[in-house]
Amino acid sequence: MNTYVDQQTGLPVNTSQPTIFKESTPPDFSGFNRFTEDLIISASGWRMIFARSNDEEDAGEEIGAYAQILAGFMAKAFTDFLARKTDKQALDLKIALGMDSRPTGPAIADAMMHIFQALGVEIEYLFIASAPEIMAYTRLSDHLDGFAYISASHNPIGHNGVKFGLDSGGVVGGRDAQELMDHFKILLKDPSNPMEIYHLGKSANTQRVSQWYSSYQEQKTRSLNAYTGFSRQVCADSTEPVIVEQRMADLSRKIRSKSLGIIGELNGSARGVTIDKPFFEDLGVKIQTLNHIPRQIVHRIVPEGHSLNDCKKALEKAHASDPSFTLGYVPDCDGDRGNLVWFDTQENIAKEIEAQQIFALTVLTELAWLVYSNQVSYNEEGNPSRDIAVVVNGPTSMRVDAIAEVFGARVFRAEVGEANVVNLARTLREQGWLVRILGEGSNGGNITHPSSVRDPLNTLCSVLKILCIPELFQIYTERTGLSLPESYD
Image (cartoon, rainbow, N blue to C red):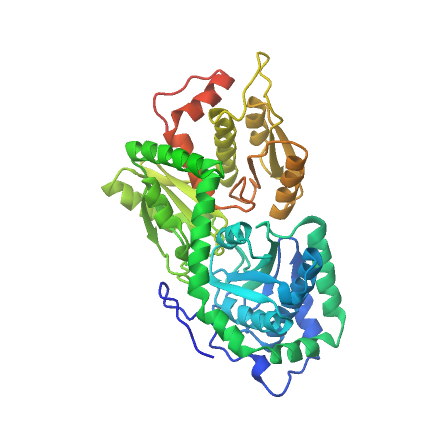
């Protein structure tokens, strides 16, 4: 198989590691069940240490024979589930396949692609892509039945795993997630199945797999375009092109008049090959990025505590030469979670914005936005014209409840897990509730409808709104009886 190189990163698109499906002699599967004992299977994703050495800090690309077979099991389970869910044959299914920036991603993808091909599933391969990107692409596509995303989120570099989703663009959750997990566990229990997966992989048409690799750049371009359009819809809170254009142009004018700069310390994550820089530049934001090459990982993956130090230092340096630089963000490996830092002009240093605090701020912003955009009004008694809901997880700070009360909104709480929060919000919308903002304040990041995943772009758009549209903060201060300060940061 040829090795295709991504022009932006210089990284090989497919794995250079030989696959067991090319070997004439099958591996010894006597220890396969013991290998899978450490596998975590949950609605948030299936994951374990995939690095061949079984060292969670191993940044090597290789995975062992058992790991390749396990990846094949995952592909088989999702194919069976998706065929039942869509009432289609496997031959009629088409899915997007992507990964975060972990080194083992290509080897896992290669194993899965062999099984997908052998089953007849068609693949659109995106290589390294952020989780919000592949989800937006799947949601807006009219030909994809779902997605498989290879990632272990904020876990150490040697870990990896897979998240699966439907054409709605969200991760499989609720009863569907349980059905998929149960089927996967049943497949794993059958001692004959590892050999079946091996032979299935050997039967794959490697020429077709190679074609998926060679055409990835075309799919990636379409994916980025879809993500850009969807991110604009989320920020503007509309799917109507004219309204989106008007609202984004208005926000851009306000940003340019205020002059704002953002530092993106991307820590080698998947966000280095997505839309961040052009998206913010189009809005009129000055943006500088560092550690933006995927796998250019310089600190621990979870974006908390000392992991924010590089961003704080870069923000302080940028602010010293250009005071408009006042914000910074650091994502995790798959780019759905992004924690923020800000420059405190009183103390002349950059500081972390605590996760619960930034989530509360986005809730305030987006609830005020509903009033600002004339979606919600109030009668003489102060009651809202619509049923408004905010959906969070159990450990989210109750400051959100206090903010929601100001706007006459009700807070609903779900079990910990992004899929649980998203599913509860979806159920409430079906019942007539207006749910613009949701998320897990305890875990960082927010989900802004119509998105169904955390996204630092959405978080930053909310912050830009509250900073640059004074009417939003004024709506809050008027409803609380506070006075609007002449200026605020």
